[in-house]
Image (cartoon, rainbow, N blue to C red; front, side, top):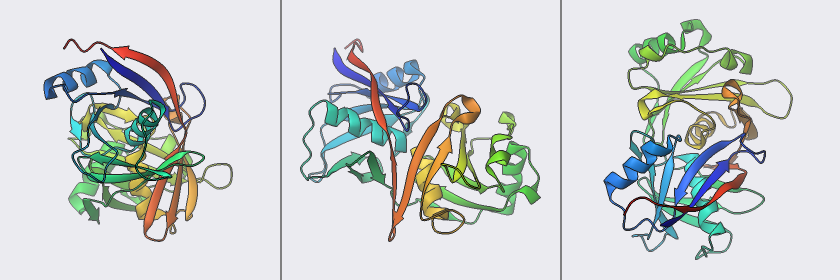
Length: 275
């Protein structure tokens, strides 16, 4: 038996954010056990807390979707840091937690809410005409509806698409059979109100048709658009199209982009993984 938490990320309201399953003390688990449990939870991500191998890290984490392992993901980073701290984890440095993952070391800042520093993009720059043709087919929109696009991949494979408005984002009805492994993030600005934009994350290639609230995508969007098409600091809304109500707090400080949100444990107990 191992300690287990299911953490709601990016919402303080029950069941309105994105849940992540966190298994503590997972050093003895095999890859097959981790993959099987992540597939069984059927959440967008399941994480496993491990002893760090880097002396600069407070803990190590492995992150799985139902179908694949990811080098980095945002809401699992915040949810895992929350679970580790709540279980008594003591960071080496005041005010921050340092996570080791497949993408390297990620700094998580403590404060009113946890926030991670966006890791460097592994792929950036313009989208080819051929890829853009595939993207608009998958989203079932016209090329003239795309104001801008860019690769904003920090691990999961995101390509970003900017539409004219939040309403245009919410109106999307994708053609899932056209995605062919692409993971597409769409953002549209909102004029006035609590949130600056609406975001949707379509990632059938990762085993999740539409992710409820997505830290990695919002990190890439912040690196791409904060201080340009979006304010330097803003709150993004995500999840309304599938019955959630996530809030992602994004801010650019110099060259760094920070992505934060509320984190609340909804399930705390033990899990039997059969070992």
